[in-house]
Length: 165
Image (cartoon, rainbow, N blue to C red; front, side, top):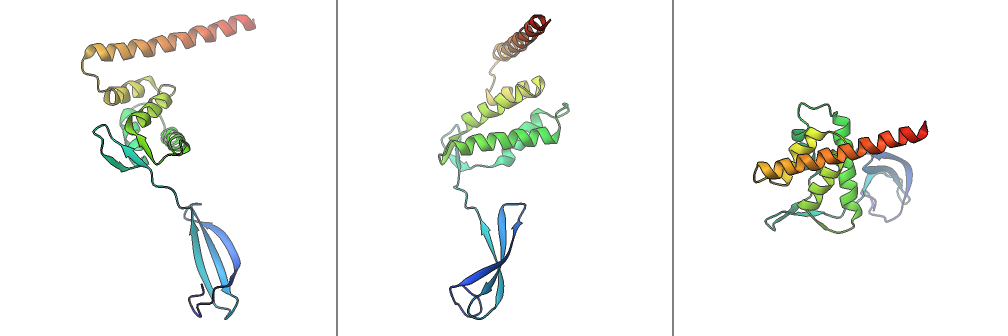
């Protein structure tokens, strides 16, 4: 609707991305009075709620995931680009589920699935918070599991190089 004459018909004169690609800026001209004005179109994302362990719900916040991974990867050779990529992957997985709610447990699992392939120390740091290790035994079990995975990968890698020769 034209802000000048309130006529319902206008034509688009120019379109371009705005707000880092999250919106489209359209320059329009009223077909009745010729007045030019700008509109913005934004994709309306469905709100996503996170169900916490205590049953409360809060809005999904990718910054919380980012901060958690950054803390886990502190003083580790994991670049900010990689951390951002991990958060992007997790957000995509969560939104691809198609629901309006997701549990913190599932988000934590997605983070661990990503970190295990990036940095062992960051993975263990995150796991210690996510899995709430109650004692040294549960911590050692997680380390043994991680070391078993690493050994399996090394063994399968050396077998493929042996067969290639």
